[in-house]
Length: 295
Image (cartoon, rainbow, N blue to C red; front, side, top):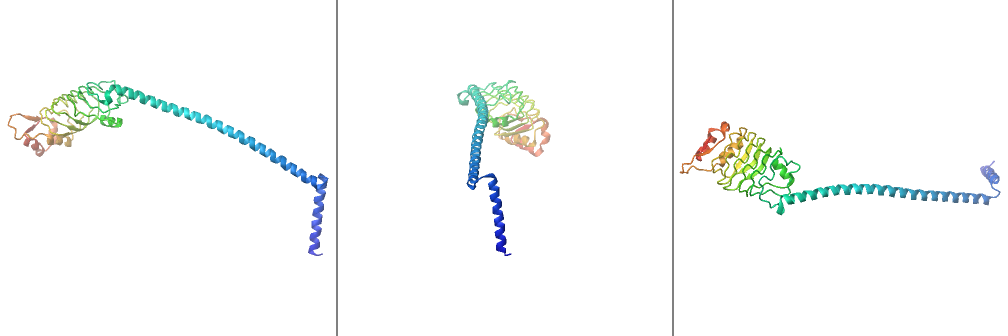
């Protein structure tokens, strides 16, 4: 039997089988085709409807969830911003009243004295530039680095225009004070008296004619102080500050006014107490050559 004849027989058998299957279910081939088309149309419609409903519901759910979440986030952000704005308004109102004229206040006598101020409440808005600074921080119990605290607040303390600063830091608990520049011919008696926690004064600039009697009385913790300008008056006494560094002591020696040619008969004296042992004979001779006695 040829290959062509065998293939024809197989095709015929398959066709007969298809026709038999169709005949059992549909009287005619056209009915079978129509049924298939109807089924397809029905399936497409169900799919479209389900897709549309699912999409619509999903969109609604997503919008609702997004809205609720957005509303909550908006309320929280608004609340947070409102609190911050409220605090800033209170801060501005207080310090604008306490340091009036845009910080132009000059009478600071006792302004930050005593225990009522803390590192949280003492956050000045403007530079502190006093003419009167008596008792400015007297008995303050803020045990802080004052220089760093003021820097964090974005302000500075300027003593260069003070007319008087008696006991300005007396009995205070500050551990460090930045730069203090005195004004000529003014009174700074007991300026740091009994500031028992004070360790560092970054720079202390002297001026002619200042009164610094007992300025460092009982400053027992003082370790570092750099003197600038000229020490031209008697009264500097650091005998209580036995922890002074060598650099601090030499800054005193180097800042002493040269009175080697003075014929007034004034006994120029600076007192450093037991700190003398930290200086060599050559270093002490510098003071003697300027007409000073170091005791």
